[in-house]
Length: 560
Image (tube, rainbow, N blue to C red; front, side, top):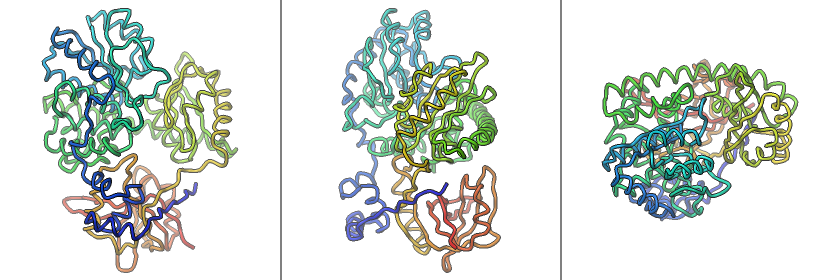
């Protein structure tokens, strides 16, 4: 589907004034203004992320309660369980708290993450009962627990105190807990309002130890959980990347090595596209314990072994994802031809660990909300849902709850449990609810373009200045530029693995290689093109010791 291009309109005089005040190229000031960073003070804050900008942990309402209870546990040498989630955010946050408690001298510190397939998300009453049998007197959750009222009630009954650290929205405040630390329940003005699970875990560890530590783990989970890289989150990631280069943990170092990365040059994009998928692969295909062990080990040899095993799991994950996506795409063609505004697909043969990835791929490709459900032999299905801009997925699912066993999530992503015989009725109701929430034809999200430039403007000083805008990610994407009427060099097109293409563009005397990831289905357009308008980001491509500037294609339009 053709994407709408939204080109930012910026006051040229303001851009020049800001550029002079900041001593940056006017194009960088233009990008800052396009993103709402319109004062010298906010721009300096943005361009200079630092650990000093990270907010006081005691700004959380119940942090003092949490610290007091943990200190009592340390004094009494209690048996404490840290219970995380199976994704990168939960695993990194769990590892961070375990390391902090070890430094504090807590000798009996257990840690665990649930099995995605046998236990599902979050702390359950049965896991609380098991903890009681093991002599646990304090449970601390990481990246979960906000909706675990049954588990909290069970803990209260068994005499176990519960501290929740989480960032998932909740309909009602959790009762029967010792302390409740949830960024989603703080005012929107709170410095940590957009923090994810590992960010909250870091604040607890900092409040307990009085010193910053393990910010590489914070960067890992923050990027992977796709929270906005603005404000404090931007500081977390920027400082965390520096931390990784300076004080690499054996596990992160080994994972970078098997990914072909150098820690001293690690970027947020490397976490998103290389490290995080390998860590997530463990929990997607079997158990996340292997990933947790990787982040906790002090042995370089064990770290390398575990990293290689995660790398193999990730290759298997990609194979499964590709196969399921191809099958799902064949199934949904008919629905989309009928003008459906949502996709709900189910099967018994798919692997449940990659349902979320496939749903995200379909949502991105076709611009519609997508739900992928995997049914077990008992006819009970677990599905992953991905939404689109303009609708609140959680609110839409609430209108369909009569056909669901359980559901939960937020605006952009959610999970559902459904019986196989209810799938068709749920699909119809979901489609109706989406149609009301999203009138008009479905379309891919618009592409935001920061500025129109010519290829002649691209040089080393500009590339270095753009790097000052990093780290990039959700809420602070890599700048997107538009060059109009550039020529495509004939015979330069190459189709690559992973549905990608590479070609060369020319504007006057300037030539640049261009790569389009997941644009393989548009290879024919490029093959027949003479001139195109091309929207792209700039990146450095390093190969065998040589570095070249290349255009990372976001979209293009063939000119007549």
